[in-house]
Length: 342
Image 1 (cartoon, rainbow, N blue to C red):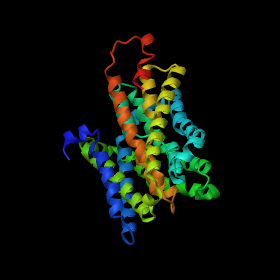
Image 2: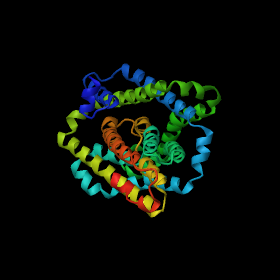
Image 3: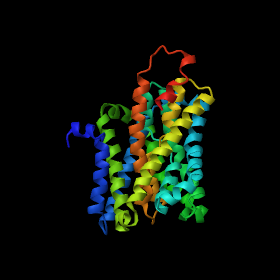
Image 4: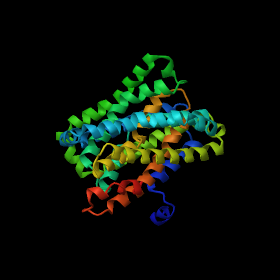
């Protein structure tokens, strides 16, 4: 498919590849002996992805961003408190609209950490506080390894983790081995690997997108084998898109207002909006395989996949608008810039 046609349809290549992965999994799902092989390759790809993330994050960026503790505390509160609260408060409206697995997926989406690459990229485009975005997004990804399983255990009452506290601890341990250990090894390998990775940005993109596509294929293969598309009515899928749009809009508006309430500068408020409104596909997919083992993982991660694409498209527009603001804008006049863009 040509680039011009993709631009006309407002679809980037990665989104198209995600759709193709879902279609392939629906027509030719992995099963039998092929499933363990696909899962092993996927786990290795995810470990490599987080190794590369660790190698890219410099110690200077951590120190520069970590000093702004008030901003980070607010961002983490939006990620791990505001989102779950919205998911719970909207339960009376969402449950009748969605299937039980899709609503479980919405709750799971709400307890996930923030993205790393897109949060930093949009903050950079919008001329926000980039060091703080690097620190916040990376820290959110690490903290999510521990916080997300606990929130799943607390909020999603019919998972195995909720019936056995040891199950949640076991899930944290498995996620730590899969995500945090490779991240730490990558960070400590920086003296030997950072220069190479810096020269080969395409490698990072290939591993990033490739690992996510593998996880999507494996998750949907399992779901299709369990009858995902037969159990999910079309109206529930349409409702899910609407729910994702409304949820993102609420968080964008609330983060912008919270930033003004705390008296942050425009640059810091931009960082808050882009780091506090994102949910990570790269972390969410592999964690779902651990946290919801034996369940309809494909249906549970479907809300995350839809929300992820919507957040990218919407935040790209907001970042582009913010990037065009005047450099000499007065402090007294910047109060409505972010709100108008949102």
